[in-house]
Length: 504
Image (tube, rainbow, N blue to C red; front, side):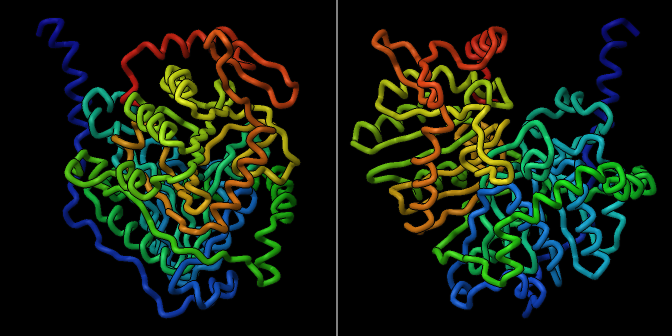
């Protein structure tokens, strides 16, 4: 054996270990279309008229967002269908895991579909949940080498580079939550250093059936593998100990968080039986799960569907934390502006973003966008609002924008998982709801128009056609990325010249 063969052999062995399990014999199940869901209907009190249309409650507050999920899980009578890109085993994630377990204990069927990109270190606790007779977990595009995940990219990069970015939680085919939030403390404002400013919708009525049918597509897709086939040797006992330890280890944090949740407007509305549902024609827009295996090339991806559905006549307000418009997207926005359409974009500033590489893909398009007449805002990381009222489109004392919301002509609005970047358009599967409602769209637009100038830098060009950032608080004008240090700015500059845009 020569030295080259010796070097290749370990890689070949790793590749062999990463072969995917067979899908034959995988259980078949569908959403439960129950005749009645008394616990859930008693908690939410949806209007009878909303059965033919949809009832919408905007979840633009982090505590409301947690209360909504807890309510659906704890009030379910029959079934819970849940899919997420991220589910952390932190304070909020552990709380919701325990709620799922208790729901299963009282006979609720739980189907949980998780993207496997963010489950590192969670094999045992997921196995413990999956061990329950009423809980079934599947992993989307799983990593077969559980310990050295990064090595999977060496042998299976085309598949593992495609992720399920969808986020939905549906109870009894009666109510659903769809939007931008994952499951984790940063999404629910739990005693952390960072809060993601985000938005979901809690919905009843016709839209729920669309989400249920879409979940079935993903559950039965060729990318969804039963957990026990991916993790056959997990320690269930250890996982149960992890599941039960969360409350003991985080007692003080939990106590403070329960106090915060008690101030939730949604919780108060549920207690008083008067959730203020807004009726609206609503439809689901989602990718075919075949996109996760690059098998949907002849089907329109979500980006094309959104372009058709959201074509503005007068104005469009785009909120996207990861904004990489590409050359073609920049030209499309410029064409809108030339037609007299007012285009406004809100994204993260360099200091606010949690993914500097994505900022590098955005930064080179700022000047062409501004020259085309597009209004550009970047969220400040220190945007302050009162504790407990972390508004989804403004921020808190340490905030990164995470909402993906597009408002068109103050009449239609999209809320979902789709970022305005190549990854969402070409690689990841995405979903969201398109709401046709001047009342709801107008409410979000007014919030944006009022809050954005207070909580974000406006990026403009000076007389020399160089970028500048206007600070709404101090009135100062910055000539460099505000609050970002030299090395961070340099890193972004270097990344911007690399050919990585298609991966962002």
